[in-house]
Length: 433
Image (cartoon, rainbow, N blue to C red; front, side, top):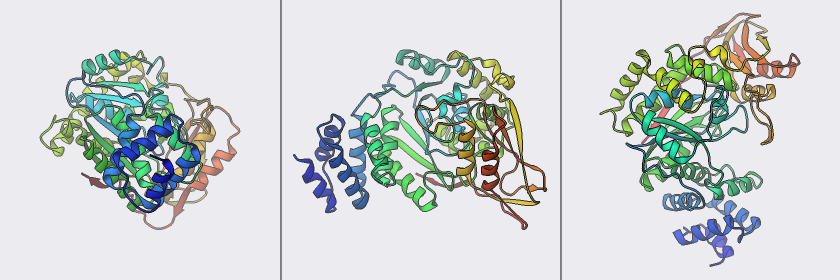
């Protein structure tokens, strides 16, 4: 078999066999196939697409290129949740204990963030003492005991995907549905879950800006999951403004706690109830999605979800007292108000700009080497559809430097204030089964 023949075959629009896809991925991972040939291969896929069968084979080839999480010793149906990412997306921190409180095992492997804010791991590390460095046997023990544990991604999880993604990033082949879908699903399959709930974001702060693109990606990932024997569904949710009101690591942990206390923002609660009800249903802990949602509301009301969060934090050496006293989380030196120049209704917030503003404060990483400041971030005092007076605060910057005029300007530039009535945006667009 020669790589040049596979490039030509895909370039001409023909389907590749399982053996051909394995040959390409294995050869590239171990260094036998050079970057220039894999670049041509990725570009051929970009233009000619792949069938569902090809996408599933590509996913499995990447899964088998490295370590796989063996969760066979974890009791029950393991359900994982994956978000395609956005601004202020602290869903996992609230959702995992919420679902675990109903006896659904959540064995979560998460990564660090590169971009607006930290990833789930970085956010959890805003909790004093919290550790994600636990071995497989301890991870399994904690999931069986508490129904929840979060571990950092192993360095050798889907190495083929890491290598291919780095190449796609510099060859204009990132935005390809088969390549994105197989990249995301390879990590989920390698993480060992039995069932997968996907949160596919759409809008200005999402990877996929247009709803039809987001739907196409969701359908592709659900099809891959099902062809590989995983019960998979997707929710398409809005990211035309940040989720909740906080962007920044410690700030987002605090907001997740507030949600579990029944005091959080409406959109975060709605999203967690939607995703969580599907997780509970797929785990067969409820007879219907509606029953699952009612059970989730109950564990928020009776405090069991909050207790599950405390147990989870304590089990991973974190200071669980932050749940009752969030002031123990890292705090910034300065609170700086970003004030509206005129009165009206907030008609749009460019989520990407708010995310970049948070990163400039130090809440995220511009490069892999960047240090994150866990205390800094932005709190949105006004969101789309809300009234604002001239001189009223649109947002509060939590900063460790007073020299933040560039951030103030960026936040002001992200807001549009209109004179007419504005309808609040839809949060959940569609569910893909």
